[in-house]
Image 1 (cartoon, helix red, strand yellow):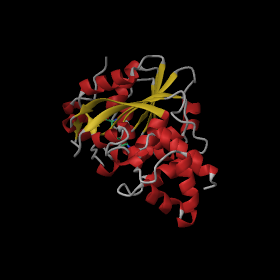
Image 2 (spheres, helix red, strand yellow):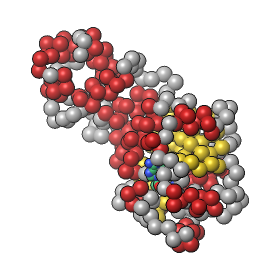
Image 3 (cartoon, rainbow, N blue to C red):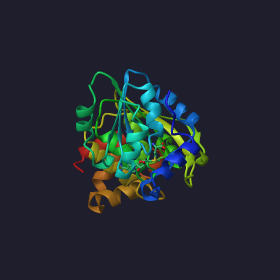
Length: 290
Ligand code: SAM
């Protein structure tokens, strides 16, 4: 077993030797607690049957642990200043590859086809850059990769939104977009003190297991997304008022008919609606030609 970078003294020595200064704007908070890294690997249930996409390897703290357990690891890192460090920390891990790209600009299907053999189960495991957690999750979900699961560290508040149930203050369009296609579980929470430097927020590890069948049959995902975001646009307003803003006053009659057809009262608020309710409303709205 090689020396792991995930120890405060080793991490600090590497950063100093390379004259590396963290860029806060890139969400650079590096994990230095090997117990947490071990728990992330356990939450991802990794085995040599698995291929892994990692987003944001930093100096390779998590990458080393992933490489110990999985078949092949491809890590996407935007900051080219980290490449010489990763070349060093991953030198003894031949089953790792670093790709110097912005994950949000990466064609993930092409990446998977180019870097993996298609014979292993594909998982995402990452300590995400928090400033773009939601865009990354949506980019991954919309890429329709043959993904088994994602095990990702994020800000605790975002984790709460992902797993929120109808009726709770955290329930919103993000909860619905994610729960439609994935079963969401918070595995454990992590104190800010497990990172160098410590971020201003605590974190949680969330596992998203891809559903074989989506929770509802949505034929037009963009239209559904627009409906859900419109319904939540002003949380204090009723569903009726939000839908009027979304579709326009001239469509009042059609909106009323669609709500009746979906068996949803106009004075309901979006946060009271389950995903199945939104799916019914979406079908009814489209039947009205909206
Ligand atoms: N995995 C390391 C760890 O756990 O210690 C570092 C995690 S750090 C929270 C997030 C990493 O994501 C940083 O290395 C940062 O440079 C990288 N990053 C930020 N924006 C990115 C982007 N758009 N695409 C790829 N990597 C990005």
